[in-house]
Image (tube, rainbow, N blue to C red; front, side, top):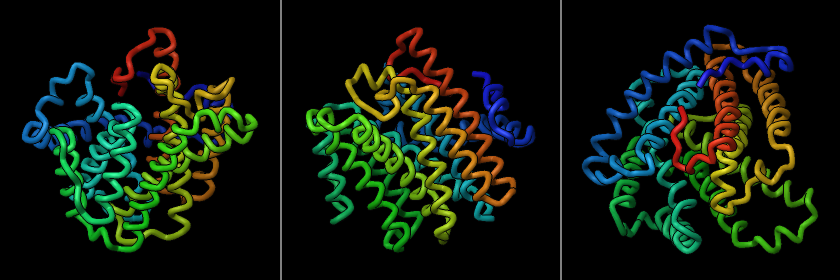
Length: 316
């Protein structure tokens, strides 16, 4: 998909430099190859059926992890650390974990989702995870390799793990309160949905940064959280029709004019990043990636509306 940000040029006074946009485009295929070479042997060893899944799950996992590689690169550069092979491997494993965890939350029904949340809580409390099938085996293997890269008892990292888990648990609990949510005034209902989206992705990017960096300043956390929240709003707009088909309510698909709302969210969040992060290659890479993601997800939304594509349609 082309991603020249023509619409953004009319409204935003600052654009990612051409060099940053070109850098994103050149890094994407490099990181896609890295992700495939890292994950394919693990998948073949522990969950080979995923490679032949009719729903294109493996390809979607590779694409999600590739985008995570770009985000991890930017997060590392913003903090003035090298994005070396170890950090690339951590980010790749993190992307795989996110993909599998999201599938447990979203794809196997309410009962399985609630059971997964309880089992994940047990994992964090005791270190024990009862493996029930090959997909869960793959998840546990990848999580184990990820946790082996860092001391997960380090306070910032442990807190980031638990904050993300709490955001996921609140999201799951909210799904079971459909009647109560409908009874709320519209403004309060939308505010709750917006906060859920913000927290789930905002805490995910903080957790990624905590895996990659030896320490995180409060100022760094504040701005990286903004970037993570924006990713979720963009993602939910792209997945609008798939979510509606699954009867899943999100902030973006509950709005009457979601594209206009997303435009406002995008510009306001980018403005915060522009003003809050010092001008440097890492900032430019992050904003160039977010701009690319915004434009391509607008296109995905329109394609899904036209074709009513399946939830597992793969988009770069």
